[in-house]
Length: 334
Image 1 (tube, rainbow, N blue to C red):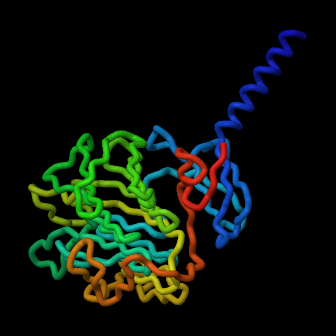
Image 2 (cartoon, rainbow, N blue to C red; image 1 turned 180 degrees about the vertical axis):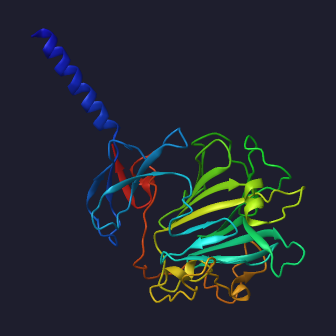
Image 3 (cartoon, rainbow, N blue to C red; image 1 turned 120 degrees about the horizontal axis):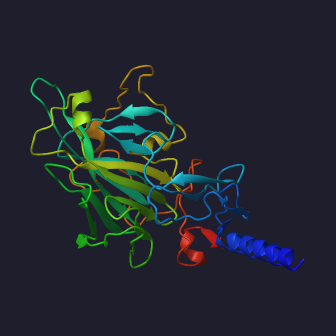
């Protein structure tokens, strides 16, 4: 009887500890479908962070009609809406795949809204006999809350995964974020957060109440070169970014190469059924520099302004490592 009692007590203690380690979230944004509800992470991914970059973590989408969490990896998924990968292939907010080639060594606006502006720098080359450049996204420039932030993949002749190829700036100054999984940097007002997902070459950038950007740095591999006939030169493996955007607070007037696909009235002109549906308008989205808000379609207003939220909202990873207010609109409890 005594042994049975001890075994039962041990089971209860383990259960309590397991429940204590499981994170629960209260959806506090009145604009979401799950406002005012607690969402408990599942047992298979009880936390929003992990020391293992390949592990799945808890995601809570407070606009999901079922108010259920999901287990997802914290690196970009190039096959989901909001992604920008490869040369470069986008999946819009409407779920439609399209390509936007741009031009090598030029900058194009990806998202422009009244409070958020994101540009991309394209790199690439044009082999003899081709009519256009092969291009990849090498850097992102972000204007948000009167601040500027940039992230770029540094050039390399050959790829070495043991070398960090990420370079950051904040308000025009170089920013050093120590290498190491779960190394975190916050802006002074904590409205910009950068978290390393692995020791090198993978980060998540969170813009408070506005967006989450999952980023991975990769090269053009020899297999990519063989399959797509890029004719990559020997002195450059075109290190570039794989990106997945999750937007929380877009207005119906949002524009940009990717941003326009989140507009409620957007009609995708990409030709269905073709191998590489292309959306153009390079001149419409071209910007003079990585951190410029000037382009034909740009609507960003420095300092921001009030806006009505789009019906398309996707809440992603939540930060519960620094107290109840760190979840950017969602209160976390253990």
